[in-house]
Image (cartoon, rainbow, N blue to C red):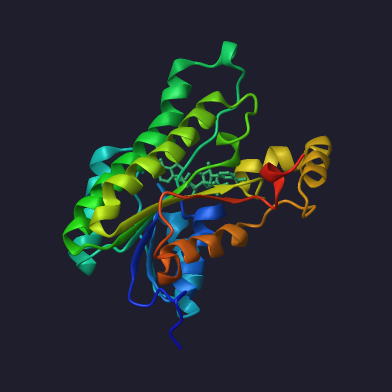
Length: 254
Ligand SMILES: NC(=O)c1ccc[n+]([C@@H]2O[C@H](COP(=O)([O-])OP(=O)(O)OC[C@H]3O[C@@H](n4cnc5c(N)ncnc54)[C@H](OP(=O)(O)O)[C@@H]3O)[C@@H](O)[C@H]2O)c1
């Protein structure tokens, strides 16, 4: 049965999809009917994650590329276009973290975070938009963060890059809306993934997250996966330039 939440017939690309939130978004979109290209830098890891989805009858494929590298992003998008003739949905999700107080933060670490978290998504949005504008349709989704809404130490490069994505969401919504393309961000709260292993293993931090979240728990990757399906689907046709916080109420309460 086709519902407004169906992604049947859509070609989608998710970067950073070998694990964590990217994998959950890719899986949820494939379950909703899309053909999903899973990307990360590691082809073997991607193949291992794609195989069980294919066995389960989902339409997915794995394409390794560095989502912080211009030439590799262009080649990734061109390969998808050559193979499938179009690109309907792009989720610029690949991201990295670096923790250091600003007085100890090396410039090379700042630039590495910004290249992957901020410049890469801008480049991917540009390449996707070049393919989407002639078709007058498309969905671009960034993975932002509640840490771009509420300040937190010691992750200044990360918060700066995610804040830039939130601003880019609004700017590109204005730029691409007239072409029938929506641009939105998901701002996850604290979700249990590899990126947060150290935090989740710290009993004090774990207790703080549970106490500060009205729903009393960490988020699960699936919480983000289903939000991506919504933003990619016809159900979200009039949602544009929006930062969708998915954080159990963490950033809405005190
Ligand atoms: N987990 C949270 O609580 C949380 C909260 C807010 C926002 N976020 C954001 O959500 C996104 C996913 O986070 P996560 O928790 O799922 O992280 P994760 O578990 O560390 O996964 C990161 C993914 O990105 C890939 N990746 C890293 N650098 C890449 C690059 N240059 N090119 C292509 N792929 C790359 C990784 O694969 P390879 O290393 O093999 O390439 C992996 O698939 C990030 O943008 C993160 O900032 C996460």
